[in-house]
Amino acid sequence: MERTVAGNFARTTQALADKAAPVVRKASGRAQSTVQQGLGAINDIAGQAREAAVNAADSIVSYYKEKSGDCIGDRGRLRCRAVRCDSDASILT
Image (tube, rainbow, N blue to C red; front, top):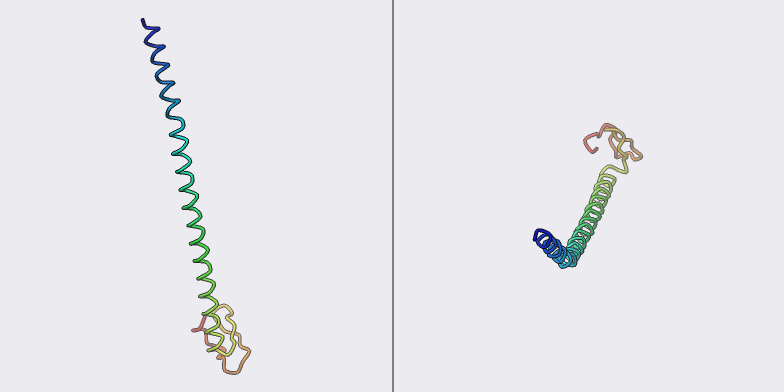
């Protein structure tokens, strides 16, 4: 009798495992697809943020070049290539 119970249990658990495998595979595939879409969205957002930062930096540099007569920052002081630029105008950097 014990052999019959053990045999029935083994068959039942194997049948359940066989039925569950496709469901688990499908759920796993959906989860993987969702994660990939999320990572793609994160990469897009990071790229847009980098582009915005570059554009902002370019705008700031352009503004100060226009205002200072083409001065170039040099460790807290400005080196100048124009008469309008104050050699001690470290407030701009």
